[in-house]
Image 1 (cartoon, one colour):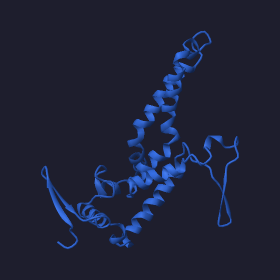
Image 2 (tube, helix red, strand yellow):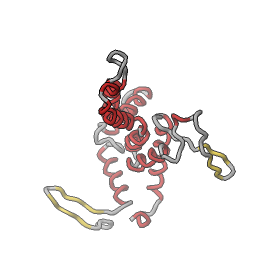
Image 3 (cartoon, helix red, strand yellow):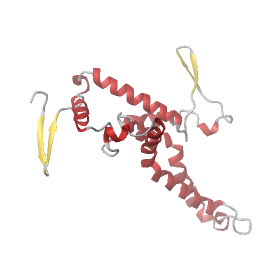
Image 4 (cartoon, helix red, strand yellow):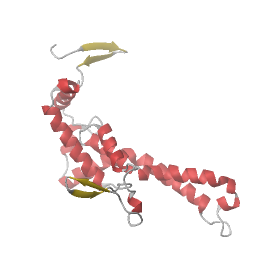
Length: 209
């Protein structure tokens, strides 16, 4: 068939090779004919997506984005609780790490592990939200990484340190990160997914092969 670059049969799976760019168009058409949406192999398809009033659909959209990342958030919360047990003055006004100094390194490591899902929350949300909106999830993760890049002033240090400023086309933009935020990365993920979907329609596949 025209456009098919090869086929591959392995372990009862028949793979048809189209190449970058073209495969996105074929995938979208197969999903359309099967009646499912961008990431709806799990969400029940177009008909399921259309059920309910706008508020219900909005809540479902948020649940589809946040439910996959709940385990990481729960793990971070449990580790925070463990860190509090080690560092809070619970035993006659002293913390466990005061009584057993050799545990200070463990407490410090646990604190780092516990904070990671919250500090890098935009990365998790960017991945999940961009996939939900029909874009490339890894581009969403990369956008989340940009929003928490070390070169940006940590959001928790606003008011303590002076943020660096970018001068772009005459506009002075404070280089501040978005650690622990939700709404900015949701908005950016939606914009990213929509731009990507529109570019797929007009970008010749030979440019991305």
